[in-house]
Length: 123
Image (cartoon, rainbow, N blue to C red):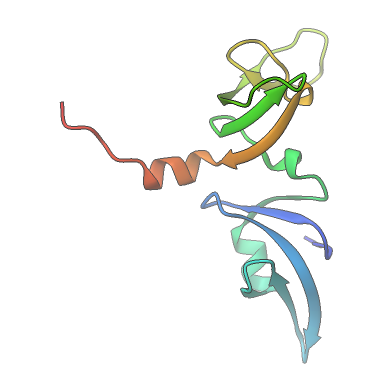
């Protein structure tokens, strides 16, 4: 997997960061991130779920986003998969039927981060 400087990365743990540097040290390639962490190419191959130049490409089913639709007041939406008959692949969107491409995403809370950080209510 070749990750380029400037790309965004989503890990299997739901962390999202940007690659800010890439350098070779002996036989290793070392990536630097915007969170000031350094990872070897070997580690990156183990932890990276998705990488892309576009942040929107990192959004997955179950993520929670703060978004705006047609410059409206920001709202919180959960991302789900829509099975579109006209498309070859399922598309992401909101429960209200708005496709991901129509949203202006302001913030992302990955489903993994939500599960790790939410508090279970005692009922």
